[in-house]
Length: 391
Image (cartoon, rainbow, N blue to C red; front, side):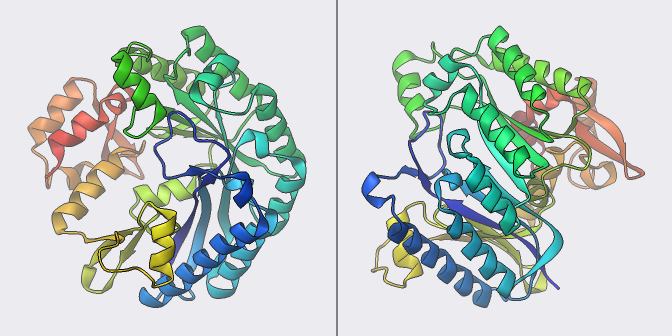
């Protein structure tokens, strides 16, 4: 029986953050109503039906469900209950499935979180990013430190044990003292999981416009961000968090299954504009399908009303080379790495030894195997390393 994860993209938010490159759009007050959300709900249901038929997903085992965005927490409670009910009726949700909803602190009220818990949601990912008012303001966040503490307290009160907090490394105005304070305050809330992302200035973001005008002078240097990352790794190691992937840390047993499924190249169904799906078909064929990053065109595609020339979804059939490269770089993102025996099938051992001698890679025992994994220093230079070992 096929085992999959399901990702549901919520493209709405109250306001667009200055660093955000994900497909999302601030929703106007006129559209913030049950009818508009019901319209999006119906599109997701139809896409689920269509994809299930096309890829024979009915009765698949679902190991994880993830609501990402955007800001999923702005959606009404019945939106989540309806989708989860449909999934339960058309798939087989595993008894211990991980069901995650991303929460923005300002919308993490007790009533909504309690409702989510009653629907079977058992994990929350709260987008803190920082607790400093100046940093939050510059980043375009609309919450404050109190909202973060309130959201975490409300989540615990509602019965959530598996809580993740997000942190961004290298935001403008994030001095070393501010960063230390952020880490200490996040640890004081005792989350089971912490995701820490190094700021990257992406096209089509407000930060990119500022960066372009100021020639990068308002942003932390790569060296500064690297230093902060190493500080974070040291702090979290002392606090007994497992650094199980480049950007993710957890208490033992609380690793994100949604993330792990990606890194292990597990199959997943992605729903909503910009969402991606990955399936392993007959005869070892593997495909990746990515929905168009435009809600209006996505709707036309789902409703079969697209005209000739309309931008369509992107579909690719992976070559053997694609599969090998994905296996290498996705495995090396994790603390366990990849089997040394497997890696030297494709990569010259001299290259690997050079990386080990430079302190970027290490030989590591994992499940009784000799594996190659990145060091913390190697994680900081992972893009450059991957570029040199891709086949």
